[in-house]
Length: 120
Image (cartoon, rainbow, N blue to C red; front, side):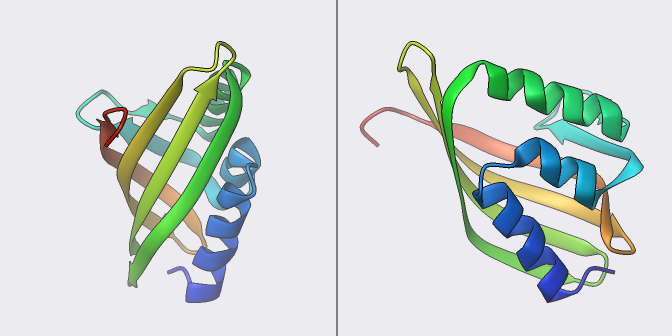
């Protein structure tokens, strides 16, 4: 079960821009991530590789947690992401990450999000 301090550490690492490092340090070896209703990606190495691939396609990524809740082994984080690609196109995403923790690491995570339309 994560402590509030452990979750706050995790959030700070993501907000600092070290997305792949957050996965390396805060996820179990057999962790999974799932985008909305897509099939989950499984295994920390695969999760890190996917994250690095996304980051390579971006010029800048802004990440901000607007709030979070810890309830036993379950965590919910409300994120705002702004991803700017190398052509300057910006994608804003308003996301809820629903996590299941095993001890002090994320075991399973599912993302629920909707891209924000420009000007919204």
